[in-house]
Length: 396
Image (tube, rainbow, N blue to C red):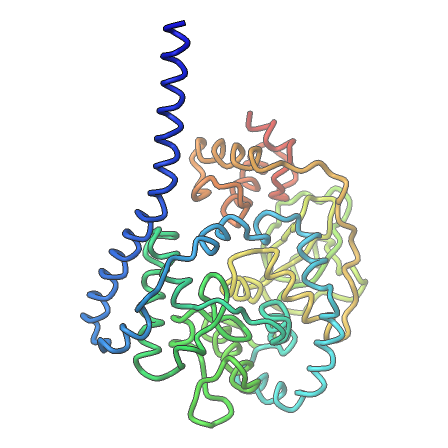
């Protein structure tokens, strides 16, 4: 009995500590957030931002726990590419894009000529980022950036973006109430981070404002300016779907289109490969799925969002809007997939062998895919970079 009484007392004490801890956690979080805002205020004042701007922007601000939770739900890194593409091209986006392409044809032609960026890619980004302005985000950009910065998500990145957003307000480039965007602080119909707005947004309609929220000329011009500034090559396609000859040796993984043509690589639709330009083989899924030759312009699209699935979705949506056909190859939808735990283990095992895969978080990005490809090449396998259960077993 004394032991039972002591055990009951121990569990009641533990429960009381847990209850008190849960009650105090939000208060401690709020105190930490207020402390963080005080630090940001001092840094902003040091940059010359006016006190009244900071009062208006930061006064009464509270942390957004929902925004922090969303950092674990980025679909372009965890969804199979075919599910991501189905979502990206669904919901009437292709038909809506075709209607807008026709309605804004003179503007798009002018921007295409001025910046050298293919209008299909501009339309693809517009469709992907906001469904052509249907929804650009309703989050308070300042609150979102402050919330992410306060927990040091991605180091100093969001703190710096917050300070730039405060500069935007201080310069009168956007009103406080109009600074709405995504959970991650991206703004406007093609979702510019504050730093991108300051560097690349343009006043294409000539009204004296860089309005990426409601001016189609400014939205399209700013997006084209961003891509141009990140190295877009005029006249070069983003890539083409291809078919590989039987028993392709995979010695040629990158080179010019002519070299691939001589090696027996053909366009999947039967048309000839582009006559010039450098490209590399790209497997968005495994070797049984669609295969592509992608160019430097594909990598420029990735500057918008560092995801292969995103870049492929933008490029393909733009082509479908311009009358292109669906991909010829079939996706390997019945192939077994690694779960979150398996993806993390895969990344840890690659890191243990000296590969730079970033933080093992289960989100498969370009670093993980590159490491898998190299390991497959080392072992004489098809270097598709696909994070399959077979690859994990191989590493084990």
